Length: 116
Image (cartoon, rainbow, N blue to C red; front, side, top):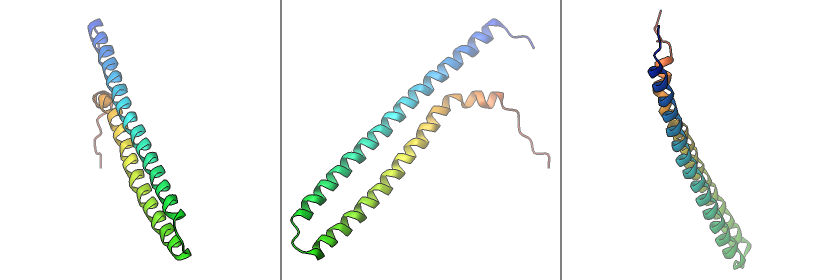
């Protein structure tokens, strides 16, 4: 097999463009993840502040326990939902970072055949 200089240059150019696309996708994905974390932190802080404010005005132990239960349930549900959302952003980030290289992987992977 004989390689031409042009083929080698084109291959290098294609790899550079794929790497650049991967970095751009990674940057956008990372920004989305950072924004999601910031939004979650802000909401968590606001919810905690609201809870403390409500708790400070409570006059009975029963009402305090009711507020605590409500706050704990809401905080847990929010945590689970936001964790799922952020996890999905990480999956999307990995997919986007890999996408520019899919063609190269397919090009250089040996064909799989079933021999059963």
